[in-house]
Structure formats: C-alpha cells, structure tokens
Image (cartoon, rainbow, N blue to C red; front, side):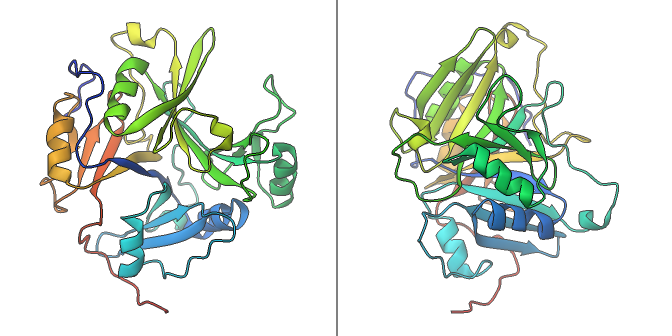
Length: 332
C-alpha cells in the first residue's frame, strides 16, 4: 500500500485519465440504516437502487440516487441485475456504509465533519423553496444547523441527517423544469490548493462548470458530462471544492480526510472507468499515491487513489467485478 503525498507532479493541462472516467458515488458511513434509509428515501426522495451485504466482513453498502420524477425502478437491490445497473449508470449515487453493531451502541457516533481542519463539509439537495422544504422536514422531526432565515446568508438551510452530517437545502434556478421535490445536487469538500485539485479532477473527466470568488474563500463546482452552466438548473450533482485562501501557502497545513481514527465519517468519492489498471497507471503519474493498488488486498480489480488533499478516490470497473457479496433473489 502506497502512502499519500501532497506534492504531486506537474501534469500537462488537459491530461485525461483513460477509460471514460465518470463520477459515480460519494460514500458516508452510517450507524443505523433503519434511520438513514428513511431519511434519504422517504424525506429526501432518493431511490435505493442497490445493496451489497457482506456478512463475512460484517458490513453492508446501500446505494441511493435521485431518479427523475415519474421514473420507475423495478430492480431488487442486492441482485445481480441491480449490480449491473449500478455499475453502468450515468448518474451519481450516495453510498451509505453500515458496519454491523454500531446501531446498538448508544454512545457510538461517526464524525460528521465541519470541525477544525475537517475536509468534508456536506451533501446538498436542490429544491424549489428552501423555506417550505425546511418546514416540511421540521414537521417530520428533522433538526437543523441553520434555517433559511438564520445567519448572514438567507435563503439556504442546513439540516442534520441521522448521523449529524450536514445536508444543505439550495434553491433551484427558476424555469429549470425539474419536477422532483428534492434532487441530490452536491458533495462539498475543502481543498488546500485549488489549482492542484481542479487539475486532478479534470483528469478524471470532470468539467469546471462554475466558480464563485470571495475575499477569504472561493468555491469551485465540477461535474461529469456537463458543460459550463447554472448549477441551479442541473439535475445531477456537482463536486464543490471549497478553498480557504492562504492554505496553499502553508506547507504544514493538511485537511482531515474522513478516514483517520477517531474522525471517520465521510469515506470517499468514486469513479467508474473502463479499465482500472490502465486508469491507475495514468493516475500514478500525478504522484499523490494510492491507499490501495488494484491488486492490493483481498478484493482485486478496484483501487483507491489519493487526491491532492489525501481524500480517497475509488476507481471501479464500469460493469463491476465479483465483489463476493451475498446476493438477493430477484422478485421480478
């Protein structure tokens, strides 16, 4: 297993990782699926499209996404058919990882981020009216970090999910034509040097679609398969990179990446590629290292690279591999 390095190499602009890389997932650890699944499915309108059960390793994975309003999904999560759909889809999923037994520990909690030097910030959902959406969630028993009429920035809100992760509610742009009450719209992580981070994610096929520059910080929004445009009109999510000015000049500065002991919560983002080995050969040229090489560990054929900040980036074969999970029977 290689260690991470934030030095990197000078990669020519426009260098693209081979194999049609597409952003496919954001992973969060959860303590109790019986609480998290109703929150994201029943309240936030997501669809559980697949599930992986690993009783031999004592954990399960749940994959959720926002489907267009009115689009049905009749595959049974956990079946091979659902796996085939998951590993070939064009959209982005929220992967919820449950380690067995955490739901029975009253004093157990994952680290949701947003403390000193934490890298992960939040996930977000777009909606037509954050004020009405807040009222709806409050009525359902959801707690809030910030309601739309609180703080300096009016009109947006931050709810807490069952594990305390921040869930931002963002107003859609008028006339976007999206009929869903909510649609998954972003994952936010903080970056030390935005130039290195943008170059890395552009290499993974993403496009810088929008940037907002302020006195003390800047926001950069990247997406797969989308040209420059209005993020408020997009159905699919963006990766929001938050850069606090000056961190790039502090050699000792480093964000926590969500996988350190005592600070585990956010796990990784993931990309599909046609050939994991060829993609990793190219990613290796960036010089940031690997948490897991494609042939490392017990699960061959998938990898975890490090990005410039040491965040884990899973590289998965489009079409999937045999993961060794206990599969469900199809109900069709």
